Image 1: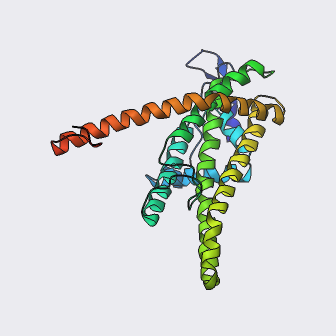
Image 2: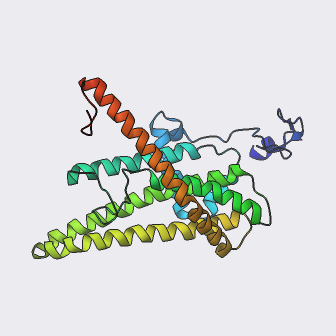
Length: 274
């Protein structure tokens, strides 16, 4: 049945060329959508199952699966994948904040997250992705459109957001078990928390760089070490613009928050100004 449907000649509605299969060989337009399993068609549940199955596929095949998703025109779930990963990240940070009584500020605190209350990491990630595409475009032997590059960047970013949360949750659970098993060593174990948090932070960042280098080297037909150098240069170029964007966002947030407080309280905005 699949072979019969694949052999049917169709006319592409975009370019008018004759094509067979799911995509037009001339322009890449999608001719037929892949069928979803019944569980993925369920409202609400289907999206969660798709989110988990996509990340599980990346875990099983760290390079092959992200490349497949990024180069498949039919796959358009990368934006939803990233939003779901951000929801997992934000929920985890929120509950960590409830547990500690205050938001986590840096990687030296319990959890090992790098300033999740600020947008610097995400701004850097977005700017680095755009700069990396420009550098790859200029230096790679074969050109690649921005669409598969952006999809690959987003899929890997979503994967590492969730992986970071799982690693931190696992390390926190292991610490709690150790404290219960060694009741007289609570102080010594607590002293290891900042060190462990920093190790987790840098381990995730290092694994992320290596993973990105291999995947983008495969996408752009370049050696992984060259892709790693390009990613490092792109990140270095993104640092200062990201800082300025973060400062601008913080300033706008402060002005907006002060204006809302003044309107709701009927007095002067926060900050002691009169």
